[in-house]
Length: 451
Image 1 (tube, helix red, strand yellow):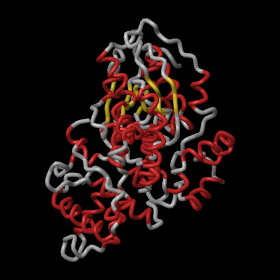
Image 2 (cartoon, helix red, strand yellow; image 1 turned 60 degrees about the vertical axis):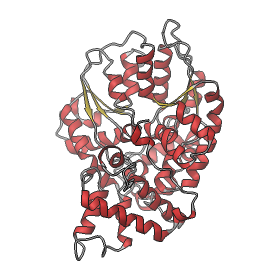
Image 3 (spheres, helix red, strand yellow; image 1 turned 90 degrees about the vertical axis):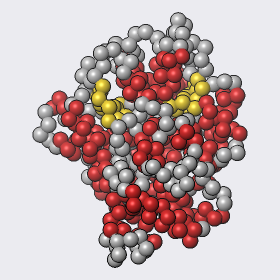
């Protein structure tokens, strides 16, 4: 990690002062006053316009008369994308003001969670990704039917009872899981590849395991092409959905459990490769900030790679196997916020640029989805608004493929493209006819490993 990431302060959640409402309020006012005077982050997300509006519309246009109860609307708009901290704010540590806006929003949610609150009505059920995924292994057809946006019977009911916006695309469940599929897959290991000898284990992530196992299958095929016989493991969710809700004890529990499960691989020199950037960010950054003295968490963080990051590491250190072919039609690549927050550079773009004759258009802006927030009835329209510039840019590029390292962001972008285009777009460019890709799937296509 770079200097800026390493300067981030630990999350002192085991200190009783962390949950002290009065001390939190003082810190919120300190930071909000700085943000109001700076305004560099005004266009990043909806949190900052909401904050500035609160202050600008107060009786004396200062923060002082703004009631603390009004702060929740600012916090609820934060998706914890980390972009204000990583790319815009001039006052992050080691600056004496030590502004960390996302982690302040996290602290507010932690206090809220301890008091029994939540950012949205949809929060509680959506965060139980493992429970939902296990149930789906038995009821996937029923759950997919009920979650379909075209289902006029169930989606209005889900909106009313569960707080899930009726127009928000929900991930479909696939059976069997990625872990089960991987046990049966026997990709041919390329013995001539110069990376042969590397040892890698893929952390499946809840999303790839239950919803998009094709991402993991593509990753296994690409690694095998490069001489690496990778295993797929999935002890449990990394806890990112619970981080969004401020349930820090639950996140710490996940960190301890997963790091212990992966410790035998780390001890044997395996690289740990994740398929979703939010999960990589948890393993690399958020877990060590929550549990800074846990040796297993520290060791795992040092061995963790995001998938495109790992491919580029192979390309630079050993050289990738030959066989990449051009992909016709071009790619629009969205760089996910949680990939950018890892401070590793534009690795997905670097990877796709290795495809011969590729036409690659890169969009480096937040999609607005925000994990479980993006499908909530009280945030979905905001998520579309924040992501509209991304959807518009992707629509204008008119490339054959739309991809993002974050599968949720990719689907959200295509949904935004669909709403912008309407029914007047030509058949060949209508977003409804598209599917969202992970970059590793397109890389596997270029190798001819998947259709």
